[in-house]
Length: 133
View 1 (cartoon, rainbow, N blue to C red):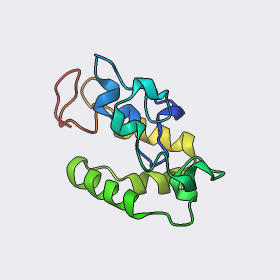
View 2 (view 1 turned 45 degrees about the vertical axis):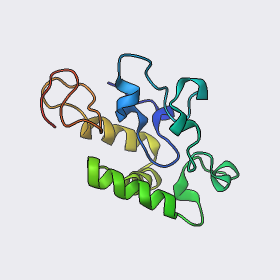
View 3 (view 1 turned 180 degrees about the horizontal axis):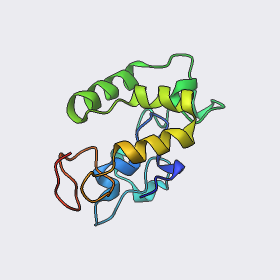
């Protein structure tokens, strides 16, 4: 259960936890993967395609001079409310700890206590064994 660095989106989303990535049929390759393997809402994402991010030296939104922007705040609020995860907190941890330590923490935080599989942020139970989060 290793999370690859390429699964961490510029907005702080851990795409390895997304139901689109962990599903069996046509799994999404994550925000940074080829567009032909992603849902359209990911391809046209305003955060991923943000001009400030495209022209920035850092691959994450925390390096932006308007971090956190309105779009990121809206996304963060939705994910905190519905799924118990904060993109802004993720980005702050990436900046503070570095990407490798952030990923190690994510692997522990999102590991099923029953079977050790990676949980999906979008589901209330493990997709492998059914144990509630």
